[in-house]
Image 1 (cartoon, rainbow, N blue to C red):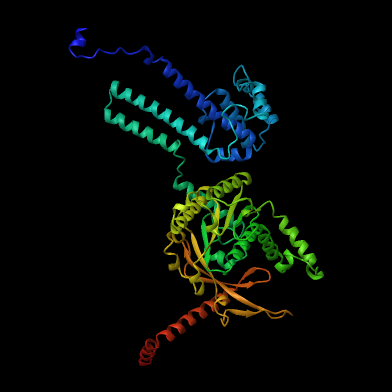
Image 2: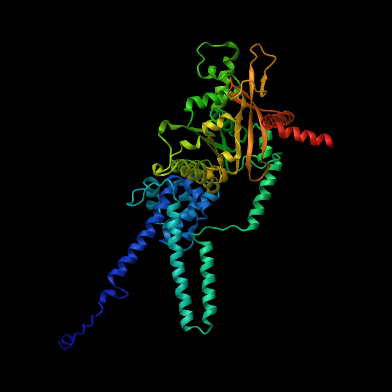
Amino acid sequence: MAAHKSGQRPVKRKSSSQGPGSPDIRSSLVEYLREVELDEERILANLVFEPVVIGRQLEENHFTITDFQGPEANRILLGAMLELIEDGLQINLANLMALLTQERPGKKTRLEISGGEDRVRELFLSPFSRPGVSMLDDIEPVVERIRDRNIRVEAHRTMVQFSERIIHGEKDAFEILGNSIQSLRNLFLQGSAGYIRSLDSHLAEMEELITDHREQKRSYLGLQTNFPILMERLNGFQKEFYLVTGGVGMGKSTFATQLAWDLANLNPDLTVIFFSLDLNRLDATSKIVSQASEIPIDYVKNPYIPRADIEEKRKAALQTVGKMSSRLILVDESCGRLFIDDVKKYVKRTRLERGGEVAVIIDPIFKILIRNQAQMSFNERCNLLSAELKSLAAVEGVTVIATAGLPKAISSRRPVKEDLEEIMGLLYDPYAVFFLYCDYLNNFDTPFLEWEWGKEDSFMIPITEAYIAKNKMGSTNARIFYRYFEAYAKFKECAPQEVENYTAMIENLERFKEQQTNPHSSRRGAGRAEEF
């Protein structure tokens, strides 16, 4: 009572519930162990349900049994499944049971340690029966959560150990602190931060790539198409982000469709995902069949009156393109509009399922939606899209080719690199940028027009040019020329000598226009030349 009268507060006694064995601490530990076991169950269930996709994801993330810190039974099951994957065997109930019963690390077999035959059978028959365990499209968030939890525990253990050494150790405290920092740094590099590769691994990868392409007798590193000059200039389409742009009607969609077919047809281990957002799936398929067989596209899509001379060729072309259905995936907007997140998920899923290289073609880039894009300006949206596609190429290790249209005002002249300066992302993010331009669409008297001689129905063939405005690992400001066959919706690359001739023609035309614009300067230049 005296203490209260003097104004002092009574001292509160600590409740026994705050001790080491208190219910709060015990409940937190139980919750922690439950989360650990639940995440491990999610990994096992999804690995059993989709062994190919989830197995490749675990392999790419270097996920092993050491990442499992829960029950011993879960580590046994994960280790056995990873052994099956490494041996090239299918993960099924029979193979897993046979493997678990073979080894006996102690008095019990691995099957008995993992929970017995009933637990393994239940895992295969109803993998998602446990509350909180569900099928996941992407297992990486669970992997990251497990890694993050493990590194926190290991870091806490390391810091406790070194703090004890600082208090009770005989060594200098700064030396102990330095060792602690080094241990935490090693833990950080090996843990959830990912695996940082050394320069030696990059050199080894480069040598392996060079050896592979020497065996294929190819002079460039990237993927192959039917455009040899373009491939030499770009060193092939590599696992980078490429942009094909141009004005209205310059042939961007046709060029993208032809690239999709060439890439799938000429690269046997490649899967091509063609997001055709400008043409519907029937129009895009008709173009592919026409380009593959060189028969009129109108007859491919609507052979109303059968023509005996090309009917058999049309049927053969349909079979040829049909054989490529497993490696050429055509996606349009018939299933709904696509967001950039949908594209990334689809690409990742396809890469994991197929296991080989993947190329992604998007026509056009502006049809891809972004969440909350109504709050963005057009330039901000373009910059974000280009950054996302560049990241997609780097993270997933795929080739990304996208088309983008230029403003209508630019369609009336040859485009230049400065036309993209206002949209910085489309200029700086791509690995290479090239413009398509056909002078015939603006000038019917253009010299870039040829007759196709030697046929009864001879017609004029316009010349389309591809101007390489940017190339991070090759020549820029170079032009390549193509003949465009409208009946087949197909480009054919001009020969090297023709490319030189057409390039010289453009230079002469530009010089002539400059002289017409500034006649006095040309006269002064001529006078100086005569003096010499």
